[in-house]
Length: 499
Ligand SMILES: Cc1cc2nc3c(=O)[nH]c(=O)nc-3n(C[C@H](O)[C@H](O)[C@H](O)COP(=O)(O)OP(=O)(O)OC[C@H]3O[C@@H](n4cnc5c(N)ncnc54)[C@H](O)[C@@H]3O)c2cc1C
Image 1 (tube, rainbow, N blue to C red):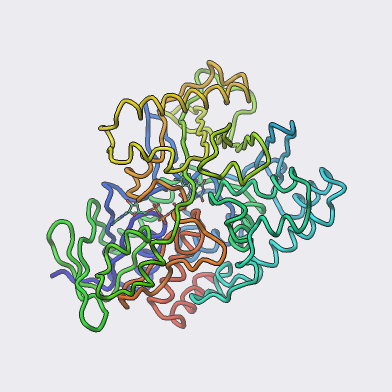
Image 2 (spheres, rainbow, N blue to C red):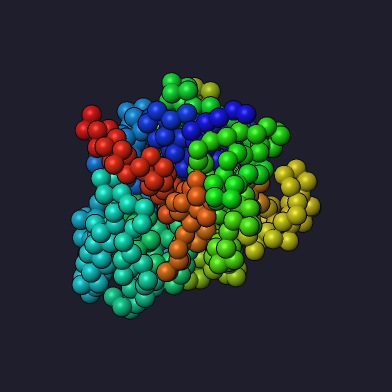
């Protein structure tokens, strides 16, 4: 039986991060990925030679000394991937269609505060109080500072109060509330359900700066792959664990793979969805309370997405940009599965090399929920019923019209090459429901992170701590610290940040 120090399950950004952190500390690692290639949501795909990103369009945290930058430094990757920052005076444009109001969101909490105070002169106190609270939450969150990482995070009061309740206490201006909820598209939970703490942690770095990587998610994946080959990490794709063999002392002694092979390891880090983790744990080693806790987790929203390419010459000013169209400012409605009115639409434009020529690439997402496609849930890729095809064609047409209304150049200027529904994401990303951000991060909820009832199995991944690339990576930092021991890990991180 092959023997490793640690097995990492899932080759998305969480699994890549955990595998590299453990390997950098001299451990012998087996990384198992169910799909034929590494990267999970981070990976790009091509249509007619045009590269598209699946689940990585922009991020915060890439300024020097910001969280993602520091995590990449510790991993030795910070100089390997090149960030491309959005223009600082208009990093993200919010268009509130019903109010006929366009807000160019600048980078940085200081300019953003000022911008919103200028836009809403009667709401100066509300704006200041909101940003003070966001900054307070982030300053008090140990996991947002690599030198203060802790697995058993001290819970803040803001963990127990919803974003909606905080905003209702600050202002009665619906448009201002809408603007402050706008980045909810980056975690996919209604304001009444997300805690103010989770909202603040996702938004803080996105308020400070917005960037992507040159070469998209693939640039990061190849940086990891190069490090793995240097460090001897064994990567196996098309592989997954079918059974954990657990002894009476609640420790897994070996793992059976889908190939029939058995492997042993001191521990395993599971970066897959909590419901998939639950399936791996033998029922006689977990309590009913644990099962019902995991079963109570709900799915965050996902997206219906169209992928297009600019035909001929790009319109003047075409470049890296993010525009969010909001038909109204009511995010309770826009992030509700039962809402069937005009959807929000996030439009990401970028310029990508296609066979050596720069081409304008467009990805446009509208929030979607598993409920929208559940009737075709039994079908698989390449075997969908005609009614599903009609659903997809209908959504593509609606988004095409929407794009043309937003910018008439889109009519005839942009050719849509493909589209993805929640079922597409579910089946390509091996997730249970195709949600973009794993489970909903709800007020007062205890996610699955760290040590599991089978004592040498650990949970990490986007559903553990916070959604998005930075949150997923951070979950793996916290769990690697638990695996390696806190003194050893803190020394390693300290030295890596100083070098
Ligand atoms: C459409 C979309 C847009 C997004 N946009 C952004 C964005 O712009 N910025 C941002 O920061 N975040 C974005 N996100 C969210 C971000 O992509 C995720 O938070 C993050 O990539 C999750 O990483 P992960 O490793 O936890 O999970 P995943 O990327 O889902 O990786 C999990 C991996 O585990 C594999 N797997 C599953 N089951 C098994 C098993 N049993 N055994 C072995 N392997 C298994 C899967 O195949 C997958 O490769 C977006 C997501 C989507 C879907």
